[in-house]
Image (cartoon, rainbow, N blue to C red; front, side, top):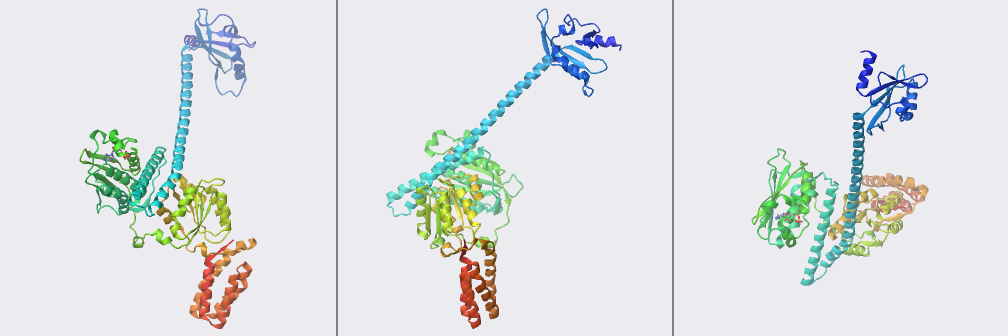
Length: 615
Ligand code: ADP
């Protein structure tokens, strides 16, 4: 193609081509297209004044890596009043070429694209903003629910606890009935709070299942025992049937499984006036794995209308709104159960014949756990209150609520425990510094210093002493798992959620009570420069106890004499005058060959070493 043919083609495509002369002016190559305004190039397109400096720099730049440099689009009105759109393109090469393009289509496409990009960005920003707002709202809701639950649980702790204490006092029949109603209403209220809290956690995606070994029969039995009280009161029979093919010991989340069974059983009792309820467990026939189980809870109650059978698992839904007042409930129990079942890899559904009763089915996946060892099976369950009697533990109780302190005192009244009370974290730390306590019961939220900071401070103090750490039990009204994690992280031994029943408190105190209570502890102040070597010194003496007993059995008085002599010489130097004294006695008795006195001396040393706490 000849150069002029190229120019014709460009003109046909809407381009005019100019070359810059050495004097800086531009002249047209080829015929000027009819849309080109009259006059010199700069007169025709005043916009070029903006672009030309860039074009000059581009032509002059030896490192330019583009062969063309386009300008922005500009718009001019022609003699007939039409808006025309243009763009200039500097072309690199031997000549300084400038193309002027009439760009109707490209301009419109670009404009549409720019607009689209702009709108997309706006939409994106809006979505991001709504997302942030939603996140804030969800956080605020969770925070609000956790706080409300805390605020309700704190007085509930006092109400339910006092009702429990009251029920243990002599009451006439009428008073007894009032207290029962009081306790039942409190329990119901607590269930509602727990449901709402569970539901909000599920909504926020915060539920994680446990994976631990458990006995299926125990879980079913516990649920039946809890609901059995209500079933008996209504004259209903309550049975369970676990098929022999079901593995007895499973791995999974027994707590959540119990919660599902409790929900279904409590509905069954609520909606049944006559007949009975049966829980059945068998392997799921649709699944080959032996540990996918099929549970059914069958009742002979009012049943569920046909058209509501599938909607009862939705949140806040009750089969018949008109029965709501008669039966009560939040409509959350089944929605929560459904989520738990799904997390366990199963499904839940209902079958019902109105008037004849309902069967709620669910499946759930577990794995087989190793069977219980014979030892575990024989281990007796602790009977806490009896076991605690006369332990005379020294307990430090920290709670700013007078009511809650009253309650703990009441719960521990007959156990012989001695309780010191304080009302804030700073006081706990002060008391802890000065006293020898067997256990600390610590409210989490207190003025001045909260329970978490106080626990940290106490653990730091303990790290400078010898002796076992003091059990610190957090008592909080926070029911979420994070609250438990927070307590454990701060150094608490365990976490009890208010409202705390008498049995739960006694069990926990019993479980964590030290074997050698502080009541019999011997506190010895040692000089600070000796502190680093004290643990090794005492450990050595504990080793001596075993050596002494062995030597006594062998009639090896020479060894006893040597060990006694060493102790007599070193004890007081480390601050343990008692060891020096016992050592002296042992040395003397070994010389005299007095086995009985040696035995007493070794026992005294053993006791002393077991009860010593250095500060
Ligand atoms: P609620 O707190 O109202 O019991 P649930 O989610 O546990 O909430 O149950 C939702 C609804 O499903 C109940 O209100 C009731 O109408 C219906 N329902 C559940 N179980 C049964 C049952 N065993 N018999 C009859 N109706 C039932």
